[in-house]
Amino acid sequence: MAKRTKKTVASDSGSLTFYIFLAIVLAIASALFFPKFAVSLSAGGEIFLRLLKMVVVPLVVTSVMCGIFGMGDVRKLGKPGAYTLLYFLLTAFTAVIIGIILVNVIKPGVGAFDAAALDTIRQAPETTQFMQRTGPGEKDIFTILNNLLLMLFTDNLFKSAVNMELLPLIFFSMVFAGLLTTLGKKVELLRDFVGQANEALMAFILLLMKVAPIGIFCLVAARFGKAQASGTFITVLKQTGWYSFTVVAGLAIHAIIVLPLVYWLFTKKNPYVFIYNMSQALLTAFSTASSTATLPVSIESAQVNAGVSKESTDFVLPLGATINMDGTALYEAAAAIFIAQSIGMHLDLMQQMIVAVTATLAAIGAAGIPEAGLVTMIIVLNAVGLPVEFIGLILSVDWLLDRFRTAVNVFGDCVGAAVVEKSILEAKRG
Ligand code: ASP
Image (cartoon, rainbow, N blue to C red; front, side, top):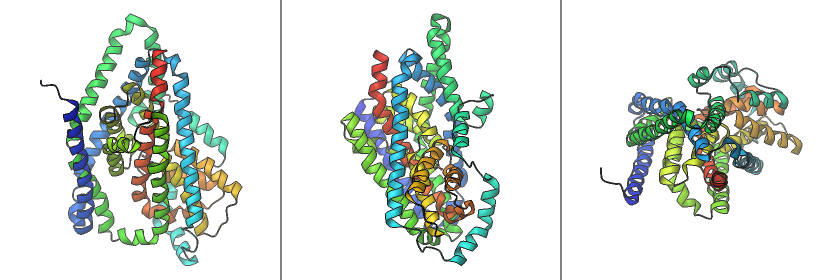
């Protein structure tokens, strides 16, 4: 077979990015003008989503294991591991602060709803259904930390795999791969098997990307079409306009200024070229609203298009997709303060700090699936004594904001992989 040059790979990837972008624009246009037709495409979107999710569990296990094999010894993981966690925490906290500053400056909730509107929202069937689904949520910070810690461990690997709980799978893969590196020749076959399975899965993702524009077209058309067909799309946007603007502006500042600055400081490379190289993953995140479903594309784009080393992407991206959610953290803090403003409850500086800390933790606990942030938001509301049923104020627009925050979540992971790459490669050499 003829060897593909770097140039053909780059131009292939450039045109694929263009087609995915076009697919999203056309999908939104057809949803606005032909909502019924758009909704009828939902099966196509669901098939694409399933194909992506199908590879996630084997991909995470083999990638994380390959990451450890690449390092040669699990004990070398200390420094890069600590840097990665520090990066996750600091960037999420920065995102939260941006959200809090913006929501205090723009004040989207002040005077947005009168007493009658608040009452209607409180008693709306959607709000009640949501509350029934989620339950009362954790009340104090120790329970939250306790639960976060427990999320790392499972009593049944297969159950976790079935439920796509990636954290225990990542933990097990690290420990197990670490053991394999100490057992030498006896387990060579097993190591080769994992490495080859990983290669094959990457090839599968490349194949999947060929149909991505069609899958993404269907996915986006069906969801936007659903909103348009119910006649609520424009009304919801008008009602929650300033709130949505605040969240999207915060996300934009984080993604276009803060993260690029961090990227440039650590790599001394042009961050906007990096954004372009990662755009397939970012557009997929926007379309699926799920970091987990996007993971195969993130790994592929980071390695093939952006040239981040396999050692780094294998280690940082699966973990990042599960616990690093800058966009979600920003949104949870902004939403909580928006709710407080809307019901006329003043939050002092101390309470806003509590919002900042709990929003960071709540984002870590959120799963990489659509609208998971809405569920962990209850933690933030509880922490400062905000009545949970007022989450109804933001329910209607969440499906849309979710797409923007998921794209930022994924971008934060990818910048992380580029930032800690050096320390991972140093650990490998040393
Ligand atoms: N949908 C987001 C994600 O998958 C999580 C959230 O709801 O904020 O990254």
